[in-house]
Image (cartoon, rainbow, N blue to C red):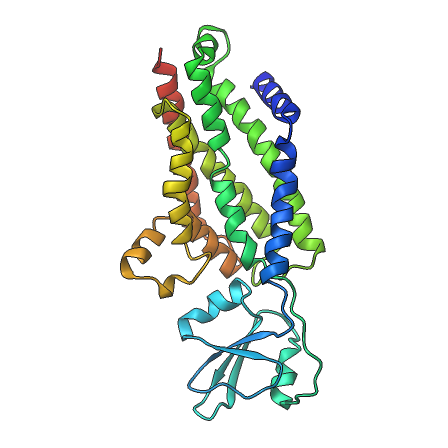
Length: 307
Protein backbone atom coordinates (compact mmCIF):
# COMPACT_ATOMS: atom_id res chain seq x y z
CA UNK A 1 0.00 0.00 0.00
CA UNK A 2 2.81 2.39 0.90
CA UNK A 3 4.61 1.85 -2.39
CA UNK A 4 1.39 2.31 -4.37
CA UNK A 5 0.74 5.56 -2.49
CA UNK A 6 4.25 6.92 -3.11
CA UNK A 7 4.34 5.95 -6.77
CA UNK A 8 0.85 7.36 -7.48
CA UNK A 9 1.57 10.60 -5.63
CA UNK A 10 4.88 10.95 -7.48
CA UNK A 11 3.13 10.49 -10.83
CA UNK A 12 0.46 13.03 -9.92
CA UNK A 13 3.03 15.53 -8.64
CA UNK A 14 5.09 15.22 -11.80
CA UNK A 15 2.08 15.51 -14.10
CA UNK A 16 2.30 18.97 -15.59
CA UNK A 17 -0.56 21.18 -14.49
CA UNK A 18 -2.21 18.61 -12.20
CA UNK A 19 -1.37 20.16 -8.83
CA UNK A 20 -2.28 23.64 -10.03
CA UNK A 21 -5.61 22.43 -11.41
CA UNK A 22 -6.42 20.62 -8.14
CA UNK A 23 -5.23 23.31 -5.73
CA UNK A 24 -4.97 26.71 -7.37
CA UNK A 25 -7.89 26.65 -9.80
CA UNK A 26 -10.60 25.89 -7.17
CA UNK A 27 -9.45 28.89 -5.14
CA UNK A 28 -9.47 31.11 -8.22
CA UNK A 29 -12.96 29.82 -8.99
CA UNK A 30 -14.14 30.68 -5.46
CA UNK A 31 -12.68 34.17 -5.76
CA UNK A 32 -14.38 34.81 -9.11
CA UNK A 33 -17.76 33.39 -8.07
CA UNK A 34 -17.73 35.13 -4.70
CA UNK A 35 -16.59 38.48 -6.02
CA UNK A 36 -19.29 38.31 -8.68
CA UNK A 37 -22.19 37.13 -6.53
CA UNK A 38 -21.42 37.29 -2.84
CA UNK A 39 -20.24 40.85 -2.19
CA UNK A 40 -23.05 43.38 -2.05
CA UNK A 41 -23.35 47.06 -1.18
CA UNK A 42 -26.97 46.47 -0.17
CA UNK A 43 -27.61 43.89 2.60
CA UNK A 44 -30.48 41.46 2.09
CA UNK A 45 -33.01 40.78 4.84
CA UNK A 46 -35.75 38.16 4.69
CA UNK A 47 -39.15 38.75 6.18
CA UNK A 48 -42.00 36.39 7.09
CA UNK A 49 -45.35 38.13 7.00
CA UNK A 50 -47.67 40.17 4.83
CA UNK A 51 -45.65 43.38 4.70
CA UNK A 52 -41.97 44.32 4.91
CA UNK A 53 -40.70 47.22 7.03
CA UNK A 54 -39.75 50.29 5.04
CA UNK A 55 -36.03 50.85 5.62
CA UNK A 56 -33.60 52.60 3.29
CA UNK A 57 -30.45 50.84 2.02
CA UNK A 58 -31.80 47.36 2.84
CA UNK A 59 -33.27 44.92 0.33
CA UNK A 60 -36.23 42.91 1.66
CA UNK A 61 -37.09 39.44 0.37
CA UNK A 62 -40.36 37.71 1.30
CA UNK A 63 -39.91 34.21 2.73
CA UNK A 64 -42.12 31.38 3.84
CA UNK A 65 -41.65 30.21 7.42
CA UNK A 66 -39.94 26.96 6.37
CA UNK A 67 -37.37 28.87 4.28
CA UNK A 68 -35.86 30.73 7.24
CA UNK A 69 -33.19 28.15 8.10
CA UNK A 70 -32.11 27.81 4.46
CA UNK A 71 -31.83 31.60 4.09
CA UNK A 72 -29.72 31.97 7.24
CA UNK A 73 -27.87 28.67 7.02
CA UNK A 74 -26.43 29.17 3.55
CA UNK A 75 -25.92 32.86 4.26
CA UNK A 76 -28.29 34.28 1.70
CA UNK A 77 -28.57 36.92 4.40
CA UNK A 78 -27.82 37.34 8.09
CA UNK A 79 -31.25 38.41 9.31
CA UNK A 80 -34.88 37.30 9.00
CA UNK A 81 -37.82 39.27 10.37
CA UNK A 82 -41.28 38.16 11.39
CA UNK A 83 -43.75 40.98 10.70
CA UNK A 84 -47.43 41.77 11.14
CA UNK A 85 -49.80 43.07 8.46
CA UNK A 86 -48.64 46.63 9.10
CA UNK A 87 -44.98 45.79 8.58
CA UNK A 88 -44.09 46.04 12.27
CA UNK A 89 -41.34 43.66 13.40
CA UNK A 90 -42.53 40.98 15.82
CA UNK A 91 -39.34 38.90 16.02
CA UNK A 92 -35.76 38.84 14.76
CA UNK A 93 -33.84 35.73 13.63
CA UNK A 94 -30.13 36.42 13.18
CA UNK A 95 -27.27 34.12 12.15
CA UNK A 96 -24.68 36.41 13.79
CA UNK A 97 -24.48 38.04 17.22
CA UNK A 98 -24.90 41.81 17.58
CA UNK A 99 -26.23 42.07 14.04
CA UNK A 100 -25.78 45.72 12.95
CA UNK A 101 -28.85 45.45 10.72
CA UNK A 102 -31.18 45.23 13.73
CA UNK A 103 -30.63 48.81 15.00
CA UNK A 104 -30.86 50.06 11.40
CA UNK A 105 -34.32 48.49 11.10
CA UNK A 106 -35.43 49.54 14.58
CA UNK A 107 -34.34 53.15 14.03
CA UNK A 108 -35.51 53.29 10.43
CA UNK A 109 -32.73 55.83 9.89
CA UNK A 110 -31.98 56.27 6.20
CA UNK A 111 -28.76 58.12 7.08
CA UNK A 112 -27.18 55.02 8.56
CA UNK A 113 -24.05 53.84 6.83
CA UNK A 114 -24.68 50.85 4.61
CA UNK A 115 -23.74 47.56 6.24
CA UNK A 116 -21.39 45.59 3.95
CA UNK A 117 -21.98 41.88 4.41
CA UNK A 118 -19.20 39.33 4.28
CA UNK A 119 -18.72 37.16 1.19
CA UNK A 120 -20.97 34.13 1.52
CA UNK A 121 -20.02 30.46 1.33
CA UNK A 122 -23.37 29.62 -0.29
CA UNK A 123 -22.24 30.61 -3.78
CA UNK A 124 -19.23 28.30 -3.87
CA UNK A 125 -19.75 25.42 -1.44
CA UNK A 126 -22.12 23.56 -3.78
CA UNK A 127 -19.55 23.65 -6.57
CA UNK A 128 -16.82 22.42 -4.22
CA UNK A 129 -18.97 19.56 -2.86
CA UNK A 130 -19.82 18.46 -6.41
CA UNK A 131 -16.14 18.58 -7.35
CA UNK A 132 -15.24 16.43 -4.34
CA UNK A 133 -18.04 13.93 -4.96
CA UNK A 134 -16.59 13.31 -8.42
CA UNK A 135 -12.95 13.52 -7.27
CA UNK A 136 -12.34 9.77 -7.37
CA UNK A 137 -13.25 9.70 -11.06
CA UNK A 138 -9.51 10.20 -11.55
CA UNK A 139 -8.89 6.97 -9.62
CA UNK A 140 -11.47 5.16 -11.73
CA UNK A 141 -9.92 6.24 -15.03
CA UNK A 142 -6.49 5.10 -13.81
CA UNK A 143 -7.80 1.69 -12.72
CA UNK A 144 -9.73 1.17 -15.98
CA UNK A 145 -6.61 2.03 -17.94
CA UNK A 146 -4.54 -0.39 -15.84
CA UNK A 147 -7.11 -3.13 -16.43
CA UNK A 148 -6.69 -2.63 -20.15
CA UNK A 149 -2.88 -2.62 -20.22
CA UNK A 150 -2.50 -5.60 -17.88
CA UNK A 151 -1.08 -3.83 -14.81
CA UNK A 152 -3.94 -5.02 -12.56
CA UNK A 153 -3.29 -8.60 -13.68
CA UNK A 154 0.43 -8.26 -12.90
CA UNK A 155 -0.37 -6.88 -9.45
CA UNK A 156 -2.66 -9.86 -8.79
CA UNK A 157 0.13 -12.26 -9.80
CA UNK A 158 2.67 -10.53 -7.56
CA UNK A 159 2.99 -10.67 -3.78
CA UNK A 160 1.12 -7.38 -3.44
CA UNK A 161 -2.51 -7.63 -2.41
CA UNK A 162 -4.77 -5.96 -4.93
CA UNK A 163 -6.75 -4.35 -2.11
CA UNK A 164 -3.56 -2.76 -0.71
CA UNK A 165 -2.55 -1.57 -4.17
CA UNK A 166 -5.92 0.09 -4.84
CA UNK A 167 -6.08 1.54 -1.32
CA UNK A 168 -2.62 3.07 -1.78
CA UNK A 169 -3.70 4.71 -5.04
CA UNK A 170 -6.90 5.92 -3.41
CA UNK A 171 -5.04 7.48 -0.49
CA UNK A 172 -2.65 9.29 -2.84
CA UNK A 173 -5.51 10.91 -4.74
CA UNK A 174 -7.40 11.72 -1.53
CA UNK A 175 -4.21 13.24 -0.10
CA UNK A 176 -3.89 15.63 -3.05
CA UNK A 177 -7.51 16.69 -2.71
CA UNK A 178 -7.10 17.14 1.05
CA UNK A 179 -4.27 19.60 0.34
CA UNK A 180 -6.69 21.49 -1.88
CA UNK A 181 -9.37 21.30 0.83
CA UNK A 182 -6.99 22.71 3.43
CA UNK A 183 -6.07 25.65 1.22
CA UNK A 184 -9.73 26.31 0.36
CA UNK A 185 -10.66 26.30 4.06
CA UNK A 186 -7.79 28.66 4.83
CA UNK A 187 -9.03 30.95 2.11
CA UNK A 188 -12.57 30.85 3.51
CA UNK A 189 -11.18 31.66 6.96
CA UNK A 190 -8.79 34.48 6.15
CA UNK A 191 -10.97 36.04 3.46
CA UNK A 192 -13.66 36.43 6.13
CA UNK A 193 -16.35 34.32 4.47
CA UNK A 194 -19.72 34.15 6.19
CA UNK A 195 -20.30 30.45 6.94
CA UNK A 196 -23.85 30.93 8.22
CA UNK A 197 -24.61 28.52 11.06
CA UNK A 198 -21.67 26.26 10.20
CA UNK A 199 -17.96 26.66 10.96
CA UNK A 200 -14.63 25.84 9.33
CA UNK A 201 -14.22 22.58 11.28
CA UNK A 202 -17.63 21.20 10.22
CA UNK A 203 -17.13 22.26 6.61
CA UNK A 204 -13.70 20.54 6.60
CA UNK A 205 -15.22 17.30 7.94
CA UNK A 206 -17.92 17.41 5.26
CA UNK A 207 -15.31 17.92 2.54
CA UNK A 208 -13.39 14.84 3.75
CA UNK A 209 -16.57 12.74 4.05
CA UNK A 210 -17.49 13.68 0.47
CA UNK A 211 -14.10 12.44 -0.74
CA UNK A 212 -14.60 9.17 1.16
CA UNK A 213 -18.03 8.62 -0.40
CA UNK A 214 -16.60 9.35 -3.84
CA UNK A 215 -13.80 6.80 -3.46
CA UNK A 216 -16.01 3.77 -2.83
CA UNK A 217 -18.40 4.69 -5.62
CA UNK A 218 -15.71 5.11 -8.27
CA UNK A 219 -13.82 1.95 -7.30
CA UNK A 220 -17.00 0.03 -8.10
CA UNK A 221 -17.46 1.92 -11.38
CA UNK A 222 -13.88 1.12 -12.38
CA UNK A 223 -14.63 -2.57 -11.91
CA UNK A 224 -17.76 -2.68 -14.04
CA UNK A 225 -16.71 -0.33 -16.85
CA UNK A 226 -14.24 -1.01 -19.63
CA UNK A 227 -14.04 2.47 -21.12
CA UNK A 228 -12.86 5.40 -18.98
CA UNK A 229 -14.92 7.76 -21.15
CA UNK A 230 -18.06 6.44 -19.45
CA UNK A 231 -16.77 7.78 -16.13
CA UNK A 232 -17.23 11.35 -17.30
CA UNK A 233 -20.75 10.49 -18.50
CA UNK A 234 -21.56 9.25 -14.98
CA UNK A 235 -20.10 12.41 -13.42
CA UNK A 236 -21.91 14.89 -15.65
CA UNK A 237 -25.02 12.91 -16.58
CA UNK A 238 -25.98 11.51 -13.18
CA UNK A 239 -24.05 13.10 -10.31
CA UNK A 240 -24.35 16.67 -11.63
CA UNK A 241 -28.19 16.52 -11.84
CA UNK A 242 -28.24 15.04 -8.33
CA UNK A 243 -26.23 18.08 -7.28
CA UNK A 244 -28.74 20.44 -8.91
CA UNK A 245 -31.61 18.78 -7.04
CA UNK A 246 -29.76 18.68 -3.71
CA UNK A 247 -30.80 22.16 -2.57
CA UNK A 248 -27.34 23.69 -2.82
CA UNK A 249 -28.26 26.10 -5.62
CA UNK A 250 -31.92 26.77 -4.77
CA UNK A 251 -34.27 25.64 -1.97
CA UNK A 252 -35.82 22.18 -2.15
CA UNK A 253 -39.11 23.79 -1.07
CA UNK A 254 -39.39 25.43 -4.51
CA UNK A 255 -38.97 22.16 -6.40
CA UNK A 256 -41.64 19.95 -7.94
CA UNK A 257 -42.55 16.82 -5.97
CA UNK A 258 -40.55 14.51 -8.23
CA UNK A 259 -37.50 16.77 -7.83
CA UNK A 260 -37.87 16.59 -4.04
CA UNK A 261 -37.84 12.79 -4.30
CA UNK A 262 -34.61 12.92 -6.31
CA UNK A 263 -33.15 15.36 -3.78
CA UNK A 264 -33.63 12.91 -0.93
CA UNK A 265 -31.56 10.23 -2.66
CA UNK A 266 -28.72 12.66 -3.43
CA UNK A 267 -25.69 12.54 -1.11
CA UNK A 268 -25.26 16.27 -1.68
CA UNK A 269 -28.70 16.91 -0.12
CA UNK A 270 -27.56 15.61 3.27
CA UNK A 271 -24.16 17.28 3.01
CA UNK A 272 -25.94 20.55 2.21
CA UNK A 273 -28.28 20.11 5.19
CA UNK A 274 -25.26 19.71 7.44
CA UNK A 275 -23.87 23.03 6.16
CA UNK A 276 -27.21 24.78 6.68
CA UNK A 277 -27.82 23.41 10.18
CA UNK A 278 -24.24 23.87 11.33
CA UNK A 279 -24.01 20.28 12.56
CA UNK A 280 -23.27 16.95 10.93
CA UNK A 281 -26.40 15.07 9.83
CA UNK A 282 -24.90 11.93 11.36
CA UNK A 283 -27.30 9.10 10.48
CA UNK A 284 -27.60 9.56 6.68
CA UNK A 285 -23.94 10.54 6.32
CA UNK A 286 -22.79 7.49 8.33
CA UNK A 287 -25.07 5.32 6.17
CA UNK A 288 -23.52 6.79 3.00
CA UNK A 289 -20.02 6.08 4.33
CA UNK A 290 -20.97 2.46 5.07
CA UNK A 291 -22.44 2.09 1.58
CA UNK A 292 -19.25 3.59 0.14
CA UNK A 293 -17.15 0.98 1.98
CA UNK A 294 -19.39 -1.83 0.71
CA UNK A 295 -19.24 -0.54 -2.87
CA UNK A 296 -15.46 -0.19 -2.67
CA UNK A 297 -14.97 -3.70 -1.27
CA UNK A 298 -17.28 -5.18 -3.88
CA UNK A 299 -15.48 -3.27 -6.62
CA UNK A 300 -12.10 -4.63 -5.47
CA UNK A 301 -13.57 -8.13 -5.41
CA UNK A 302 -14.80 -7.76 -8.98
CA UNK A 303 -11.41 -6.47 -10.10
CA UNK A 304 -9.67 -9.40 -8.45
CA UNK A 305 -11.83 -11.85 -10.45
CA UNK A 306 -11.13 -10.26 -13.81
CA UNK A 307 -8.53 -11.81 -16.09
